[in-house]
Amino acid sequence: MEQNPNFEMIKERFKNASLDEKIEIYTTTSGLTVEQFKELLKYFPIQHLDKLEKAMA
Image 1 (cartoon, rainbow, N blue to C red):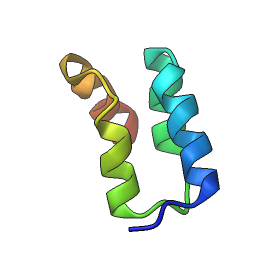
Image 2: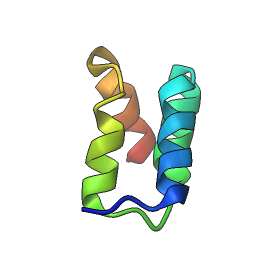
Image 3: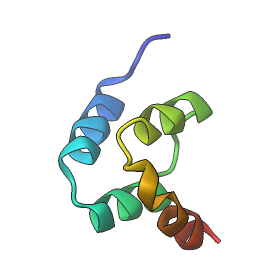
């Protein structure tokens, strides 16, 4: 699967973001594929998934 440059920028920003920034990026970014969202989740601290779930509710 080819990654577009915009997604690579989002991914780098996500990797370096604080927890709150990661949640904001994940919940406000549109136009990504399911696979791209899954890729971002690889860089999300699993112990805080409940916070992400609450933000998405």
